[in-house]
Amino acid sequence: MSVIDNVKSLLGLSEESEQLKTIISLTESRLKALLAVDVVPAELEYIETEVAVRRFNRIGSEGASSHSVEGESWTFSDNDFASFDDDIQAWRSKQKEQSKGKVRFI
Image 1 (tube, rainbow, N blue to C red):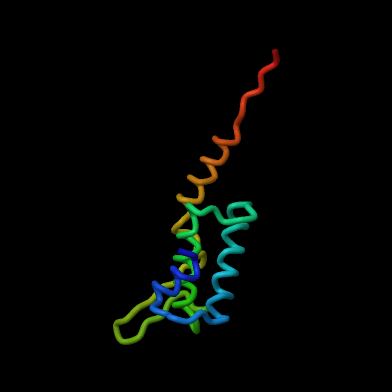
Image 2: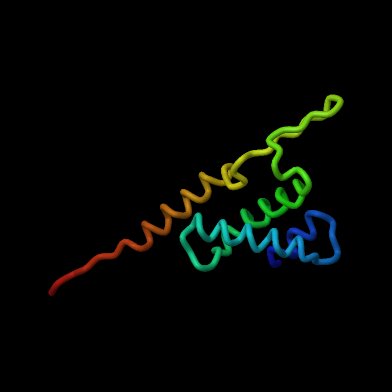
C-alpha cells in the first residue's frame, strides 16, 4: 500500500486532497533530508505515514505548542520526527555497516 493510501485509511478519507498531497510531499522531503537519501527506503515509509497523519490532524493549530480547554489538553512536539530518532539512527547504522567493504591485494 502506498503512503497516501495508508494516510487516507488512517484518517478515514476516501478522496485525496491537494492539502493531503502537500503534507505527504513535505513530510517525505524532510525524511529524505534526515536520512540523506533520494528515495525513502520502504522499511521507513511508516515514519512518513505517521508524521503525515500527525501533521494533518494538527491543521489549524500549526503554531501552538499546547492547548487546553475545559480539562482537555493537547501538547505538540516541535519536531515531528523526534519520536523516530532511534529508528532513524538504527537505519543509518545499518547502512554504514553494509557499506563497509574489504579490499584485498593479491
